[in-house]
View 1 (cartoon, rainbow, N blue to C red):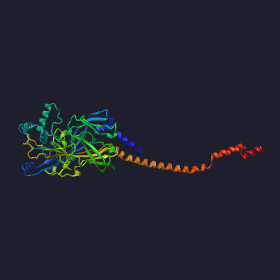
View 2 (view 1 turned 180 degrees about the horizontal axis):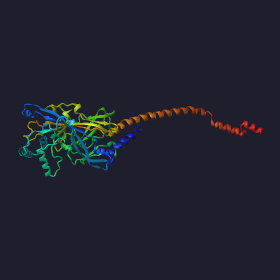
View 3 (view 1 turned 90 degrees about the vertical axis):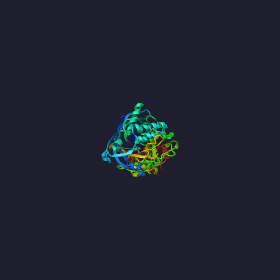
View 4 (view 1 turned 60 degrees about the vertical axis):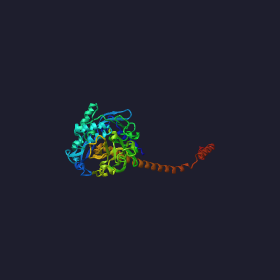
Length: 481
């Protein structure tokens, strides 16, 4: 409207991903460096809990331990269908100014490798599990339910007997191992052949950043239906701008969860210098899977508030939630002391510039949990934990880095220049209309006075005079001559 769509379309066209452009270079190697802050749950009373002196596990949230992430896209390939495929290289550097505590802090945490192994192999035959059990206990002496590690090792990786065994077996079977140590950020910073394919916007500017494939596959095979297995949703940088409004549901594809996450409008916020953003937060029932295709066969569904990702992680019982089980079923928190969910501290949000569909800022907060999954053959492991107990491990807050001034100015002009152009065109068009109407009225009022003389009559009189010899004055003149 008011011809300003041309201006907006031009800005959007400049933001499409085209090889060799300035936008491409900023997309390939983003100048904004996210800050990742990790809050770890320290299990402080395991001896008392194991001896049944304490009825609940006491959790102490420690941290945050913050790291600045540098991202670069590798092996970028443009495809004929208007998409681009790439891999990621991520590096992390400790940020002491944003952290609380030392990387050398000593923590007691669940033995993630053991819990994961028992969960992955729970469906093997009884004989196979007895063999694995004997190997763990008597060959590598690996049976403790918890481990004592430093914060730095737990985050960036520590040597683990079970992980080394897995590496050996993988090498023996000619498979690649993405990381050599076990830690919270090792998979994120690992150099792998994983790829993501997104739309560039060259064919349709409203589809910039929509994920179309993961590792070359256009759909997943983890869930019960085509809808849940469909790879779709934003990569987080752009959202379809024509669908953004207060009643819209926006979708973000989360690779680690193998699903798209629904977001709903919360409120409008002042992002910077008067540039307003629409804030979207996760749908309240996002992690409620009962009766949905995310609960396979609708059996053994996870409690409300946690999401079972094991179908897309080779059976590893990783459950995702919001920090401190925010919006979760109370049964999740009941076995623990020290969990205090708070929406202001633990919610997830995305701030979007409505006109462009561009993400101005985001704060992602997700908690990592592991479920204890006991089975026959593994009776001697994890004795102190009840079966199906979901153990909080840590929660991560990922905040978008500071936006470069050049980026912000584009957003600023898209926000305010368009409005000014709309006002100028609106009032300018109105003024021109009024002026035109005024002169039209004047013309109409003046024209009737010139229409009183009948030109037909004048022509008829003139003809009669000519036939009569002309006007009398001319006759007298001629007579005198």
